[in-house]
Length: 292
Image 1 (tube, rainbow, N blue to C red):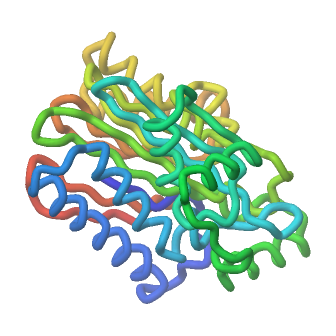
Image 2 (cartoon, rainbow, N blue to C red):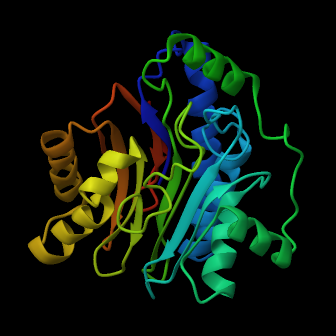
């Protein structure tokens, strides 16, 4: 199951504009299906799917990330293994094409969970993860959104995220989330995406969750873990827990965003408070489903 962000998507006014999101999501879901069918682990699958979404300029992550208040890119990402609760995350990184790959290395190659800014960039060098040019990740859409934000000084028009959750043939769950954040965000702002329990979570005892939206609201209610707790301790399924989490987000914070969830039984669910959300999934080997 994958998502490409939640929000108003006010710029999507016709079928051709929607197609870039729908087609992009479908291609990634099919890649995930192929990997899992071939016996790939849930962890490898969510990493690969997240990297594909980071590579697609339609989405706010990797290439396609929005610009901060100085017109620069700062990205966050996290990945988590439901079998061991191992996780890795990075925040405030730049010049990295696939922050989710760096987050995976944090999980595998350090004793830490989260590295930020200069420390994360130094670790990327030590890992041999190549840096790309300053403008390699900046898209015309991101520039246009930033210029519109500067003119209006209003609410950020875009705060999307990408994410993936999976359950493999061994019953292991995994989750990944990656984002460029919010257009015009303050330098150094970190949202929920790299925060375990807020924007990402995976535990074989409950579910795997990836969130998207205004991160401050998701952190306030520890959104991803809230959903997991409903499953593990209240016996809810993915659909019930997801709806309960979204209702809490709406009532307590008037939060904007959405989540995708796959539970320990392989049941999929998604919900959002925004006008739209891009998501795609395959449940129990069935047909590919895309919703926008």
